[in-house]
Length: 246
Image 1 (cartoon, rainbow, N blue to C red):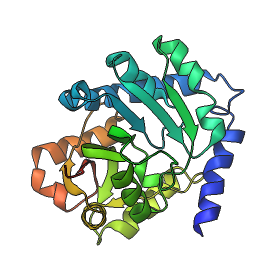
Image 2 (cartoon, helix red, strand yellow):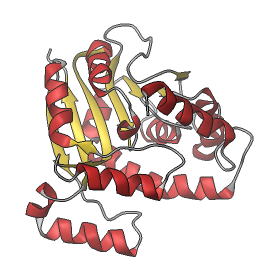
Image 3 (cartoon, one colour):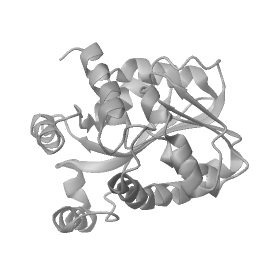
Image 4 (cartoon, helix red, strand yellow):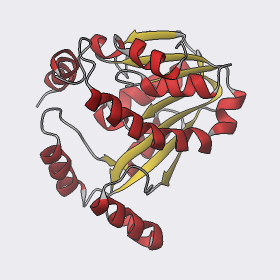
């Protein structure tokens, strides 16, 4: 499947989804995002010192930008911009602003590799469980380097990752679970290498969280927490930290 086809599938999903289109106010969507918000809030608290020092923050691949709303509620001083590839995704941000009693400062429909923002615009850029949807990782990381301020940080949070050997199996599994939108599992070492080629320092931290897991996945990630050496062998969620030199 070519890149344009993948992007169009993603865009069409947000237009036509029974639960996530702009005209829908499905309780299933609200409950799902609120549950996932518990995981995101854990990440926000982990990186709180970074957000406390920042003034401008960009979310990439935010869908309805509910995570931007949580961040704005948690840190009102931040100028938060939420983005997604799909115009009909960011069109729903008002629903989450109402729920979280906040106002995101700006929203935009744009691609991760072509945002249109000026050079050196943001102190922090983050994507929450979204970077595995990005179809052009090399170009995206070059774009992150361009729009980050010197010394700024980009975060890929709560991403499914694996090693190169496990990738075919992991890729097949995630696309059986959610076939309507193509997904990927990120090869951590490859993403880190691309980031360094783009001029960013890169760190990958495995993060087998237990929050918002069903019984089977909870047991799987519990074992990974107890036996850290397995995290190098089998798929695991991870956080990527990219830093632009000053």
